[in-house]
Image (cartoon, rainbow, N blue to C red; front, side, top):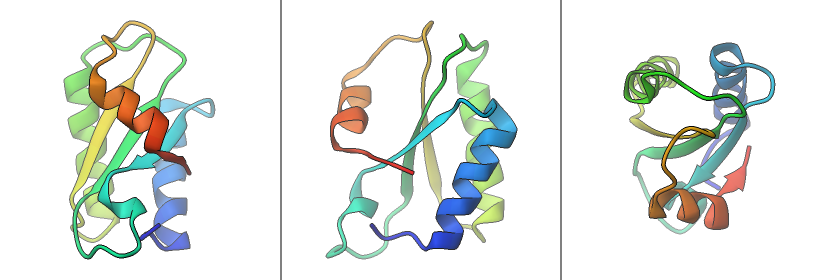
Length: 99
């Protein structure tokens, strides 16, 4: 995994502050491969409650993390009971690593 302990803490704590203590955070994509270089940070947040306006929530959280991680681009995928499950969600659940 190509994240520092500090980056992991920032992501996990920010997710809990923004979405509550029950949020589950998964890292997926190229950052899981120690042999690759660069790339954005792909995370999925699994929420237990239904969400309103998921695109806005995802964009706002992505912007927050980008600021906290000194400009590192972060893509945020939301999984919630009221949202459609897409193939990208299955990839994140199957290949992702819980932070």
